[in-house]
Amino acid sequence: MSTPDIRVEKGHAEPEEVAAITAVLLARAAAQPAETPDRRRPKAGWRRLEREGGFRAPHSWH
Image (cartoon, rainbow, N blue to C red; front, side):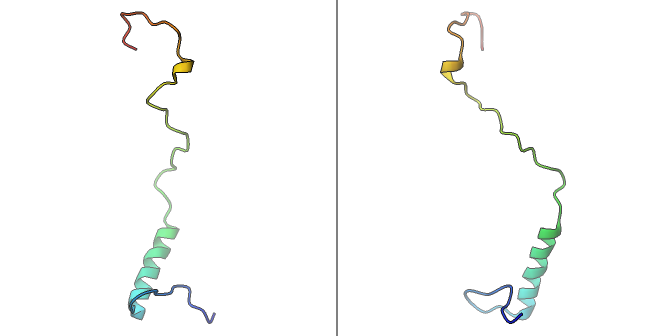
């Protein structure tokens, strides 16, 4: 392991700072989400006109 896993591109980081950011990254990687996200696509708020019926009653609000 001659090459470091984390490298500072600009500036100078002390070993304690590198250790702190490594601990935060490892903790975030190990944390599991509270609930599984819903992977379904959300329903669109608009309608495609070619899929609409040809006539709507004038008293309907849809």
